[in-house]
Image 1 (spheres, rainbow, N blue to C red):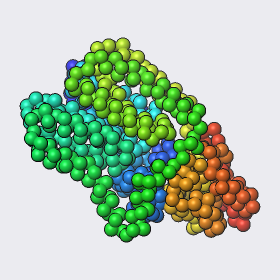
Image 2: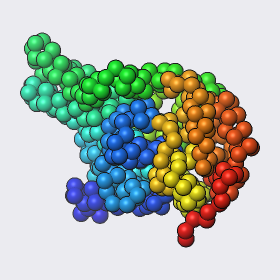
Image 3: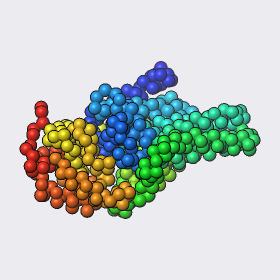
Length: 489
């Protein structure tokens, strides 16, 4: 099997795609895999309907991520299955790059294949079951990393032109990743510096190095610079909204709203899940060579990107999986037991999580049908719950700050550039026909916002529907002067 199948590049790619489909198929059609990707799809949909991100609908992610979801929204259907299938293709393609990079590090065909498969298996363990942003941008970053692994061979031939072109491709890929999330800038900087180092080793002149560096920086920042220029053409007010959302608001977000014990639990849980891969990487450290040192440098840059945000949600560790599995292949090549142990642990965790996880898809669709039937052409308000409700219910959105956490929870208080409670007051002044609220908060409340909503619910609304979501419930409240309408079967 190893000789017949795993030495064939096309066969390896096909097998990794099959594995990706098998691992992720259980979630196909589920609109509420994660709060983030629901919102990305909503923003992508609104972008196609003329909304201007950061002005008409607000978030702090780069517009490139929303452009991906807008393109996906052009596919048939409501976008749910489409984005999950596209994300699966990205996951499989990234796994293929991991496998290719592992072969460059000297891994056997089997070890390299297992590294690619491990990448696919570990994604859902860290909330990468659907379309989290790293599921997409890991492809660009991993491709840039694989290109960077070409540097020792290029430098040994003194191929200055080859290094310049290689760096151009790697930095452009990093630039695309940066327009999907800004943290890959750290990995992109590492790739650029590595290319400069090897360009010097190839005996390039100093003018050539300066010219190459300027070219690489231009390509790395080019996609973001283009977006900045486009927003600049919209005038000062629009440009300031874009600039604040992208480059200022994250520093005003309150990390202290997350208790230290919660942060510690997140770190402990993520490190525990990554432990099998980490052990294999630690064993590979002793067998470093030039190529493997480059791969360790990539891992270090990815770890820095993970640490810099400070809140340590599990999906923030998704960019670590590609360099970890790549380096783990070194150990897989030398120790067959490492393959058995790593895959055994990964698959066991995956199966257990899949079995014990509740499927909230049916309830999410039912809730959306209730909201649609009772909105009557007016805009409902999802105070806490699923932003995808707006899309599934085919209703208008009452605020640019439609991601529920933005107005409802303390970590975002003071980080949006507006008075969050004031925006909630404005929404309520229009007397939404329906309000959706969770029975429990997912973070510390923005108490001013919560008081306004709970006061309105007590005075003017009554509960008409609820559905289970994890360990709490989502409740639909109907304005008291309206007659409840059952959704069509």
